[in-house]
Amino acid sequence: MVHLARGVSLMDREATAAWFLWLILVFHPLARVLANTEGDALHNLRTSLTDPNDVLQSWDPTLVNPCTWFHVTCNNDNSVIRVDLGNAQLSGTLVPQLGLLKNLQYLELYSNNISGIIPSDLGNLTNLVSLDLYLNNFTGQIPDTLGRLTNLRFLRLNNNSLSGQIPVSLTNISALQVLDLSNNNLSGGVPSNGSFSLFTPISFANNPLLCGPGTTTPCPGAPPFSPPPPFVPPSPPSSQGSSTSSTGAIAGGLLLELPYCAAPAIGFAWWRRRKPQEYFFCPC
Ligand SMILES: *[C@@H]1O[C@H](CO)[C@@H](O)[C@H](O)[C@H]1NC(C)=O
Ligand SMILES: *[C@@H]1O[C@H](CO)[C@@H](O)[C@H](O)[C@H]1NC(C)=O
Ligand SMILES: *[C@@H]1O[C@H](CO)[C@@H](O)[C@H](O)[C@H]1NC(C)=O
Ligand SMILES: *[C@@H]1O[C@H](CO)[C@@H](O)[C@H](O)[C@H]1NC(C)=O
Ligand SMILES: *[C@@H]1O[C@H](CO)[C@@H](O)[C@H](O)[C@H]1NC(C)=O
Ligand SMILES: *[C@@H]1O[C@H](CO)[C@@H](O)[C@H](O)[C@H]1NC(C)=O
Ligand SMILES: *[C@@H]1O[C@H](CO)[C@@H](O)[C@H](O)[C@H]1NC(C)=O
Image (cartoon, rainbow, N blue to C red; front, top):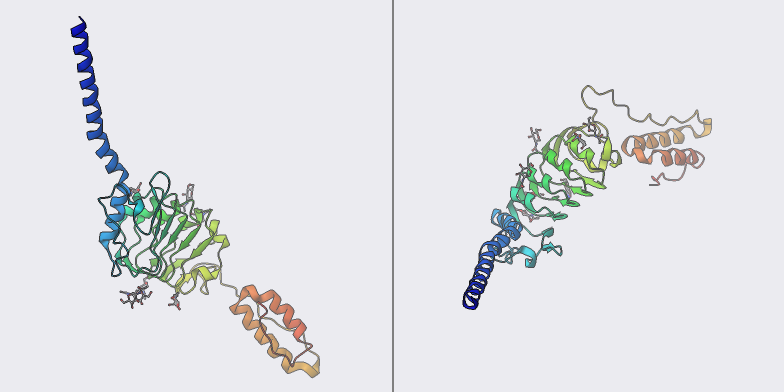
C-alpha cells in the first residue's frame, strides 16, 4: 500500500512537471506571439520605409517586444503608446498594420518624405491623441474612419498632396483642438458644424478647390457669398474729404482680407478720421 501510494505520488509529480512543461512550451511562445503583435506591426512599417539615416536600426523584430526600440515608447504593460519619427528623412509608405497599435496615443511622422495613402486602419487607433503627418507627400483622401478617433486633440495633415473632400465624420471628434489641413489639394465644402465650429480659415488655407465658410469661394448652390460690406465713411467735413475716403478704402480692404480684424479696424478708422497725416496700421 505504502509502496503503491508513493508510486502514485511520484506519477503525480511527473504529471505536474509535464503539465508545467506543457504550459511553458505552449503558453510561453503564444504569449510571446501575442506580445509581439505590436513589434511585428512596427517592423512591417520599417520594411515599408526607406531609411537613409538608419534611424530604425534598433527595430529588431526578434526582441520580445518593441519597447526598447528607439523612437518607440511603451506603457507599463509593454504596449506602444508613442511613435516619434518626425524629421527623420524617411520615405516610402505607411502600412495598414499600424492600426494594430491599439494603445497608441501619439503618431508623429511629420517632416519626412512619406508618400502613398493614409491607411483607413488608422481609424482603429481609438486612443490616439495626436496624428501628425504634416510636411510629407501623402496623396489620396483623408479616410473618413478618422472620425472614430474620439480622443484626438491634434490632427495636422498640412503640406501634403491630399485630395477629395474633408470627411464630415471629423466634425464628430469633440476633443479636437488643433486642425491643420492647409496646403493640400482638398476640394468640396468645408464643414462648419460640430468640432469644426472652432476652426478658422487658417486650418484650410491654400486648398484652391475648397469652398464655403472659411474659404474665399462660395459652394455651388449655396446662398450667395456675402463679403462684409465695405466701410462707407459718413459724409466727411469738406476740408478733409480726400484723406477720409482713402482711409475708408484701406479699412474696406482690411475688411475683405482679414475679417477678424474688422471691428478694431473700423474703430481705428473712425478715430483716424481726425488725424489724417498719420499712417494706418492694422492693430491686430
Ligand atoms: C524629400 O526629398 C527631396 C528629394 O526627393 C529632398 O530634397 C527633401 O529634402 C526631402 N525632404 C525631407 C523632409 O526629407
Ligand atoms: C480596423 O478595423 C476594421 C473594421 O473594424 C477592420 O476591418 C480592419 O481589419 C482593422 N485593421 C486592423 C489593422 O486591425
Ligand atoms: C515631397 O514634398 C516636398 C515638399 O513637401 C517636395 O519638396 C518633394 O519634392 C516631394 N517629393 C516627391 C518625391 O514628390
Ligand atoms: C507649406 O506649404 C506652403 C505652400 O506650398 C509653403 O509656403 C510653406 O512654407 C510650407 N510649410 C513649411 C513649413 O514648409
Ligand atoms: C457622428 O457620431 C454619431 C454617433 O456616434 C453617428 O451616429 C454619426 O453617424 C456620426 N456622423 C458622422 C458624419 O460620422
Ligand atoms: C487637385 O485635384 C484635382 C481633382 O480634385 C486634380 O484634377 C488636380 O490635378 C489636382 N492638382 C494637383 C496639383 O495635384
Ligand atoms: C455636421 O453636418 C453633417 C451634415 O452636413 C452631419 O452628417 C454631421 O453628423 C454633423 N456633425 C455633427 C457633429 O453634428
